[in-house]
Image 1: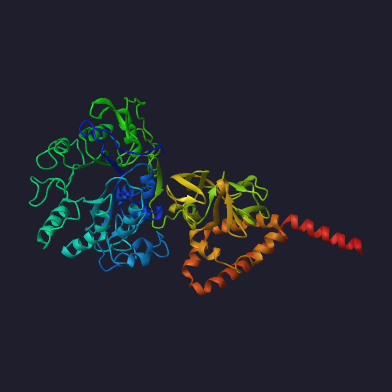
Image 2: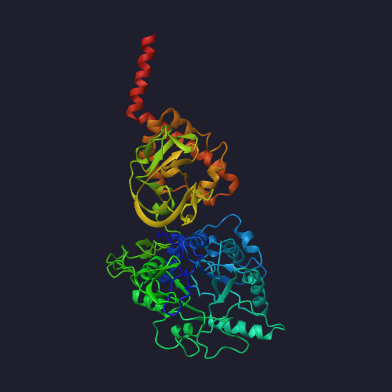
Length: 615
């Protein structure tokens, strides 16, 4: 990430340098690959591709110098309208344990698509505002509010139908004003700009009908031919999304003309998935005071490479980090994209195409501003066992030995000791995938102390809580190490299963050795199935045979019939009995395997000879 400290820059039209840059849908976290695969299976590949991105937290965006935000909201005056999302019901998505409680509170909720695209850095508008109010702001903050009132049509064969979104009325406008009023009157204020033209017209009509026409929200004058009666340029704004489109965007004027007339103008510098320098340059030259982008670092580099008038003396230079400097030439922006081709490719040179039944997905998103792609399979629940059934680390991951040395996970075997915390040690029961190597999709998490790659459903400690790796994002913490970037990759995998269910990895990151489907149950275990089990005892007494038994018998068996499906079907009270039965079955199989093992036969013969010699 570039060391951004401010994004204000000088324009030929605005020497005061009061500009704000922010990211499109600032709150957004990508749905899981399981959810994206379900959409693809239903034939909605375009939506799946469009929503597959994760932004850093609002706090991380602000720390990087981004000072304007976009938030999508749904009205929920009574609470509970969105507390049971469809993607959670079909188990393609997981949410925090208090999600239903949060979503049961009355108030506007934050998400992109109800029941489908629900992951966000703040589930309610109130919590988003609280995050923004806690920032060390020194000037007005602009928040673009898009009020979601549409309900997307789902095919009849879809496993669920979306919740019907509410249309705005006077009561809901009053409720929205109440939610934002404290922030809008704060010092410095947070100004809430209405994105939609229809919503703006409705709000203007609502204000006109109030006994006291107080104005809390800022309507959009886009496509209007005159400023509405009772309003002025100081309490409205104009959204000129693409300044390269010929003709006026409002009041018969272009974005540049509106800025010259002292109107507040918002523009978009690019349109995902395509970065176009010409559009970005035109946006900067227009003088728009609020700019939203999907590629903030590319926009920043473009700002540094172009000339603007800074200060009253009209000295040519560029304004970045709050000061004017001489023109700073940088190399031509090359393409950062690699990977497979898309319907609308982000990079012309992308040539690798996906197999039938797969779709190309953007897998790198955020303040770095560049994008990579991968092919994922279209399915409900993503039937690939590599992505869901196995909690795995990349095969080149290192664990930490009891003496503090790094040790390759791939070299571990049953009986070895590893650190499972800063001051504790655990024994390896078996090392999964030690012999049966295969590739899996992985999340590569870059953090302050290094990198860690693991499968999306592998549970690790993020912000002090054990959650699936896919919930890690820029700005979250792995222990005391801050995450700067998360991208999707692929590679061979490994997973040492330990007696505690935890393992300390390279860079001091604490992870479990479990997938999401069983992590909570196993980590809460006090006796059965761990630490008290025959399998654990056998691995302690006969570590080499245990590892060989797992490699030769158990791994092929689990590949064909994974136990997670049994766990999902059983009532919770029966789970201990099921684990006990499974443990007995494993122990019985171990006995048969051991008796057939040449190593055990030799050991038994040696014992017999020793006994005979003592007679």
